[in-house]
Image (tube, rainbow, N blue to C red; front, side, top):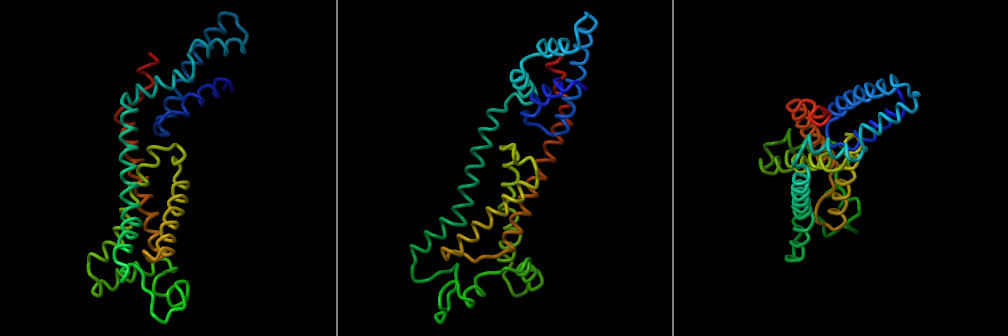
Length: 252
């Protein structure tokens, strides 16, 4: 395959906001159309390089084709993305408020007690071994297994909040990021950044004494973002199947 044609096709398709399967289908159809155009110019007596250049010129300007394809596939993309960004901003505000700001406000309002952090009177500081033992867990799934195997010792709302709640709170993150930012099309990138974000929140909670540091929270948060990623991936796949190939609509 002519590398100029391949580069031209990739330049058009790579910027499309659609599934990888749809991109492959569009690339295959574009390749067929361009080969037909090139063959026609070759039959007219043009050299191969000149035939390729003429085929690309007659096919269209890459950015314009990208816009046309995207509009054909999703005519309300701009409005949808604007709505998605608004929803994501609201989600981010709620999460930060519940996990950080609300707790900070509570600490300022009631300075006599701290329901989020336990410091014994004999402790030498909140990074001492005694305080760490009471307010931090570094053993993966230690607290989660404690909740599940010792359910009779805890209120059900506490168990749900610390297990299912930690999964659900990051599920929208895994849903919105791949939808809004192309860099999160890969699951590995989402996992790394979800872990970093969760770690930062846990560290801030401990450092500000508005929460305990729990490695289980980080793992469950990350698992939640993975579920969100899988959900949006499945939805994109189903949407692609229902639409079929959108390239035919503007190529014919």
